[in-house]
Length: 465
Image (cartoon, rainbow, N blue to C red; front, side, top):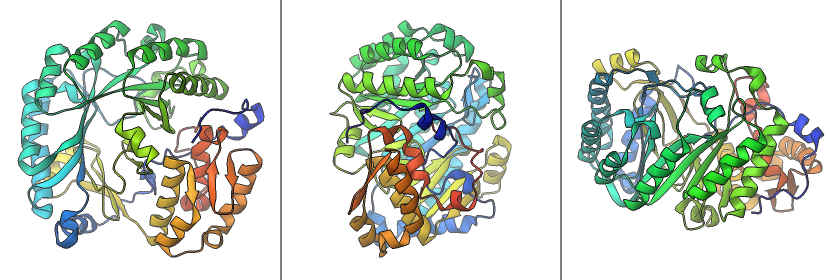
């Protein structure tokens, strides 16, 4: 789908959609998880996967959360522990092993895994030996299939060329560098100073070691950014030419995330400036040959993410866009979120509570949700909007035994208003997100969110622009 903007976005449209809304890395969204979620529902879903036809189902995806960071980035909304004490890592790895043991008792040994992602925090807080220990433990319990995507988030300030050798040795084939912005003034304002030369040298070293893919994370909307300053970062990223680019809008929620209180609200770009940064980013990356995968991802045409988009196999999970549709995701570690069968689950958010559960021999799940038939239907609809920008009625009707226009009569009426504003096209057999609508795709998805229909409070979410 063409993601270029056909016409300038009007000030009225910007004002109308300068609202808060979910990112839809899941539906229902994580804020809808309940503490009354019975952990038995999660364990039952694990067991069901291990028996009968489910035993040969689509390979698993694993996410491992490493919460430690040496330094605090003011924009960060991740669950992290700021510490210079690297001796805290070893006990944590021991508890991760205990959590894996609980999963293996339900899943069985040797479940196939085709995607692994280490996130944080900063996974490269771990020493080389600790990374070896972690990967050896995972390989003892799971079968990492050849040709899978095995990625790790890399803080450029904590790694050098010799450590890249270790990552390659351990089987990681994808690296994600946290860049955010190359501008020194912006970096200082968010307490993340890392010279561009350092990142360029690391990427060059990674190329020499033949990693399959390099991702660069960027954030627009940070304090002291302007469209002009961000243009310079965009030019540097195009020169760097990573296989993937993740471009996120900064979510300023200081009432929820204490570190963000160190950011001066007056220094944050307004909605118009943020949309300009997004528009210029899309123009720069697409002009350089990248495919616009969706809301926050770009990829070179030969990358599996772009290929999955072209073939209609794209999915969106808790890490963003993914090449594996309808894949069970096991989340390991503090605060990790998983999806197994028709359940979502989240681990304890504090180290103390996480360890206490495991000391008792219990899954550290404290929140979650068992999805209803309506949840599953609406998840399919929202993911079609977010991933393809195209919603084909017959496909949904065949999968869920409904008549689309009847079931979603109220939503269709709302979509007519979005069509008048140029965000979608309503056709006889489908709904299509327009070029302008891609800027506001979260607003289109929100139309189908039953929870927002009954609870109009969106203050818990970031702005959609």
